[in-house]
Length: 607
Image (tube, rainbow, N blue to C red; front, side, top):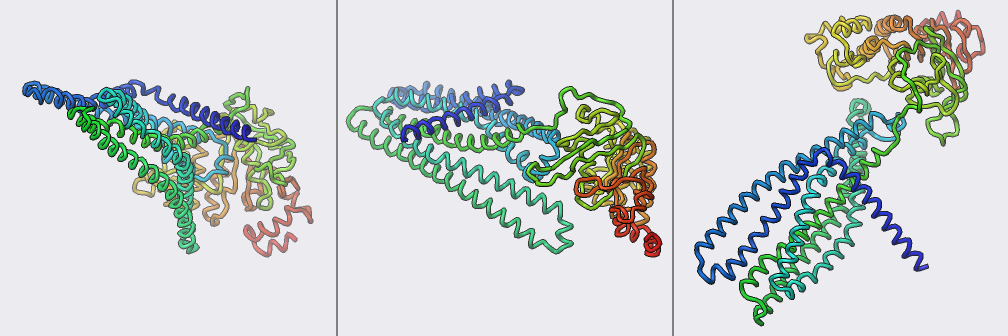
């Protein structure tokens, strides 16, 4: 039983060693573009350490030779040599601080760029399951810690290693017996470091998770600040933040506790070095085993042995912080991305004939009920199909599956007879324009937001798109026109203005397939009329799928599909579906459409 435990322990250590080795190899690969600067940094760091050792060497020589023999000229010459060495040390220190930081910052920028590029390729499901604030924490805090390790780690390791090795030889050259007495204290420092390091690493990880949680809470609260104020829930948000803040403090408390133990114990051991050196050296001097000059030099030089040890402990702490951040970085980088099926082709124009054949889908495979259950329908080229039905029935999911925001679990979705899985995502989405109820606008100007629909859009094209979307007159009424800033997420605009701006974006894109997902929901009648006019223009000649609750939006559709509980319950034109007295569409019509689009008298007439 004992042997089995020891074997398991050994195996786990090997696995941990292999993991760290692989991580280090991967980490080192990021130095490649900056190899020249990195080499300069390391050389200067090594030079710094080498100039630092001149002081005890010259001190010993002066005490043992120059001063006793009153060699005044040599004393001045060695003083000048030491001064020049310190000038060189200053220059090398500048290179270490400037170029070393630039290497770290450049690597940080590369990693952040890689992370951002990775996020752009992640599937929708990733963002469904990860809060924005936590993702931001990885891009900012984690990468910052990695940058600190990238810059300070190698140079500190080189400097401390050289200083430690030199001090071992130099102290031994002064007096081997006294040096061995000093070195015998080292195992105690190693034992303390090993014992505390694991707990410190665990507490560091907890602190990172807590900080990510705080970032997530803050992002959520700031994004929803208007809702918070509207419901007078500032106190609730404060309590939620305070809970996360306390968890962060407790995590940091554990981290600082283990760090404090490590530092205090390390300082105590180094102080023991000084005591041992003073007493044992005094005894050696008393018994004539060492000269006064060598004794004085030994006292001065012992710091060249203790300082690197302290720096190595600090390096291990920085290594823990950096490698923890790099683990989280790699965890995100290694996640699967959106990828085209092997052999998928790019198509410049997909004009229509959309077909769903026996399509089933669930957002979570553990869910008992599928969001879409074996649905089939066709949208002929240039025609409009409207999806209606109760909330949660699967209408928006259908809209998400067509551009491959999610992938069907079974069945086939095709355009022009081509399975969408055999079409590259880039070309598929280039042919699809989407107007949603929840419009997202970017910080910037009207022109920049409209031009988001086409990267190389000219000023004339932007103006034309704005006119077609019925927002040109409003933009021109503003002092700065198209150069007017719209604020974060278009906060300075009304709901209707945001919607028309998003429609202008799609006009500019000029797709052959159009998805309108609740595009006129929650708008007043006047605004809806403007938007509906723009949408009617937009739909001309395009294959369109409409999700709506308003009669004015769907009544002229070529076909209406009633979607409920993941199934298509009914299909037909507006008139055909109204004739089914017990049909679901008629019930929806009577309960929702009549009151909003007609009057109570019409409702009675239709019954």
